[in-house]
Length: 271
Image (tube, rainbow, N blue to C red; front, side, top):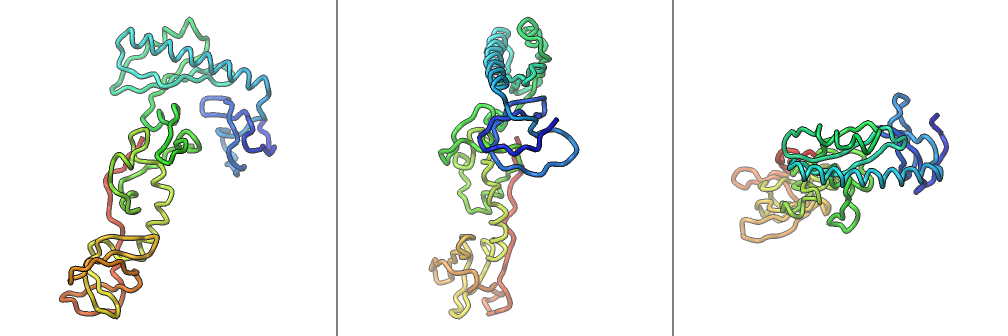
């Protein structure tokens, strides 16, 4: 039975994973879960026997991973064996691999027959899943989000970087997996809200009071200001509340600002 007991942060527990029972660590407070389905639910606190068996199965799976790597190399198979992991009941061994094209892995399954009695499942993984399994440090100096706390990968697009006024440098915007940083999504909603309150880039605007007009060349959503390059050749940072759209011919119009949506970005990058 599943338990309704409250567990402490950092405590080892047995959970119902997608493939079967697994040992996990409590990293957050309890959340309400749907009544249908058991995936992700805590089954019980991990006992000393559970932890000992989990460690033993981990060592056995690690040995099998290196065995498969050697056999794949010997056969010249263009495949990367990323990880191997048992369920706690040792009924299933999941081998995660990466390959550029579809590949026949029946020979590797046969290689495992004499080394394990568990059912073997080969699972293809992408760059993000590899980073999650192998672990790495992000540009922030902390463990990358995918291997620390993310449970699933949300779509991330270059538009998120544009909306946050980040330099579109692939090296700075990519994580260890080579894909766009997962953390670009964390503050994106806040930025889209702020961008609704300021003129869009390249908009023609005039300053209330002085009447100076020019073009918006840079946005500062957090400050609520924009950089305006005036017709007189001056570059100045001005609060968005002091601006209004410029009519044809530069005539004044105090009706409302030219509030625009953020620019559309490129295609989404998935896993």
